Length: 303
Image 1 (cartoon, rainbow, N blue to C red):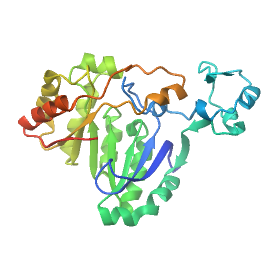
Image 2 (cartoon, helix red, strand yellow):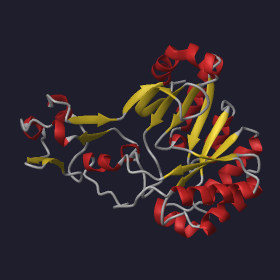
Image 3 (cartoon, rainbow, N blue to C red):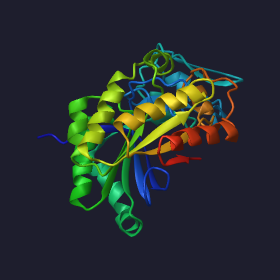
Image 4 (tube, rainbow, N blue to C red):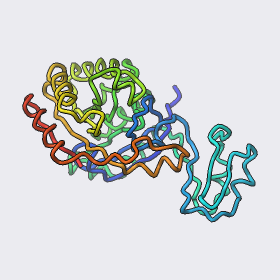
C-alpha cells in the first residue's frame, strides 16, 4: 500500500496554543470553507501556490523573464501575479534571489512529517503535549491525518485534531480512532448566515460534531468571535443553546477576531473583505462569556 502524502504549508514546533502542553502543529493545505475573516488565506487552495512579498523584491525582473505564461508584472508598487494565467509551476520561485517569491505548500510523506514531530518527543512527554493537525481543513486529507495520528500513537505521542468539521464523515470516524482531543470550530447557528460568511451551510458541521461527541473523544468548541457576524447576544445564546444539546461537557473557547493575517492577502493578489473591522471589545467578549457560563459551560476567552 502506498503511503499517503499530505500537502503541508507549515510545521510549527513548540506551540502552546493548539492543545495542552508543548506541541508540534502541522498545518495542512486546502479548505472547503471561505471564511470572510480567515487569517490564513494561503491555506485555502489544496495545491502549492506562489506568493510574493513586495518588501523583499529587488526589481531584478528575473521572474518576469522566466515566466513563459507572462503572468508576472513588476512596477513601483511591487509584484503582481495574474492568477488567471499562473499555473503555480514555481519557475519564478527558483530564480528569485531574494525570496520575495515563495511556494506555500509542499507534498510530504507521513514519515517526513513524523521525523519533524519526533524531534521533540521528550518535550511532549514532560508537558503532556503532542501533535496537533490543523489547516486549512485537516478533513480534506483524511488518509494522511489517519496515518500520521496512528504513527504518533505508536510512539506514545498525543494527538489533537483542529477542524471546522466540514469534511467527509467516514474519514472523520477513522481519524477519531487515533485522536485524543478535538478542537472543533462553531461559527454560526443560522445556516443562511453561515453560508453567507463561509461559503457553506453548517448542517454537515453540526452532524459531524454529534459524531465526535458520541465517539467519547474530548472536544473543545472554538468560536471565532467576529464583530457584526456572530457577536450579538442572540447569536451567542443560539450557539450556547445548541451546544448544550449536543456537546454538554465541552469546554468553550472564544477566539476574538484579529487582523494578523490581513497582509497575507496582498501576497496572493486577493482583497481582504473585513475592511476596518476592529477587535471585539472586552465588554462584548465578557458578555458572551457570561452567556455561555449561564448555560453551564466552562468558557475561556483566548488571546
